[in-house]
Amino acid sequence: MEDPVLRLATVADLDALDALMKLATRDIFPRFYDADQTASAVQFVASVDRQLVEDGTYFACETSGEIVACG
Image (tube, rainbow, N blue to C red; front, side, top):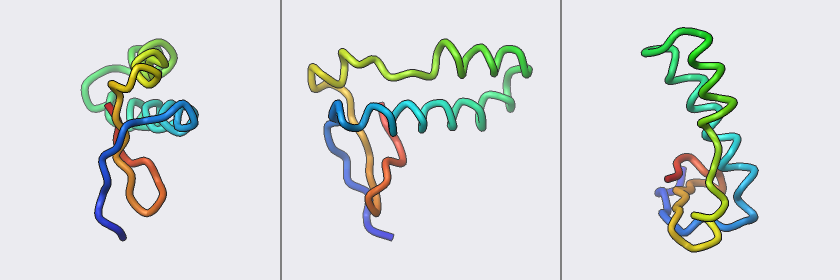
């Protein structure tokens, strides 16, 4: 595994970022929230703000060609 690289996210990353955020929410939220709250968060909260990506203020952390973190 390569060392992680922090970089600015690009519009081309949007689908991967969205998938990562939904996956993380589905996996982490049940530790603190019930099933309905988790499902709602996946639907309404776990999405990338495209404007942040477009204005260069959103980051992606990538290792071995895969985005593993963002924010």
